[in-house]
Image (cartoon, rainbow over all chains, first blue to last red):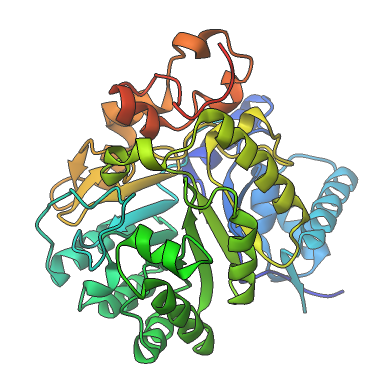
Length: 103
Length: 332
């Protein structure tokens, strides 16, 4: 299985306050999917990632998909199959945007 | 985004108000402020870096008039900033273009307002300035520095923007920014002569947006919140309305902080104030982030998307952030 990295041309930062709020919302059982926890800028365009997307993004520094899901499973209380599908969908989406490098 | 980012994403930094040009639209020409020495600029850069601001863009004033420009840029790059600048290009040489690359500039923007040299030179009030700007672009490309072109859209060029895009493409620019005209500084003094009518702005944007959607080899940037009334972005914007005070702040030559370069309201000074404290607690920023519709905006169906348009233009012409953008073409 190939390791995956963030495209180094993409400038990004974690929105720490938003992440803390999203984690608190998740603990309360509230929907935090609209909270942008990572901002990224690519070719002059600004984007945001929600909590799951942001946590995946931060882990993409040379990691394979299975290990990525293992690590996320420690934070997200979601069944493994659903988490794997969410991760796969997210990776397909950002790969299509050119945000990933495959080793 | 449900909240304002925890700190600015971009700092627009006027390192100097000095300029070798005397442009007819310039927002900063009438501004005067003492210039900070190198060490104090670095001191502020270090304070800003603490809050993970990713981008610094030098405007001005002409940045190349600062003899410490490349030293400051090297320092900023070491702190993790992505540094860019806008310059008229007149002082750019092959050697300085090389220094721009070595010091870490991510992009350099050259201002060119017409494809016709005599029109550009007249607008910028310097004979030969178009030729120099084109040379500057070539020097930067030779040195591998990423190039952008900036054009201020106004009476002299609004029907010729396709030529401006073509010129930028020919020069090898990755992006052309078609800046909307701001009624600030000299731009206010000369607005009757240079600014477009609301109907002309609408016509320009309809055509420019259509061109942007077709362009594949160059990015066409138009950062104007009133375009939300005629165009739905493919992805939801991070913030609506003006981005100043929500995604960006402006630092003046003496360290004063203003919401943007076109709003001369000082909210603090980074020699003494903390960036995060200003960002979180400034009453001025709070008002800009929570505008209240008035006059024709009160009943306008587009308000929730444009939030009254450009706050700087509204403030420049009425003294009120909440007034409708004078460029707005939507009827009452």
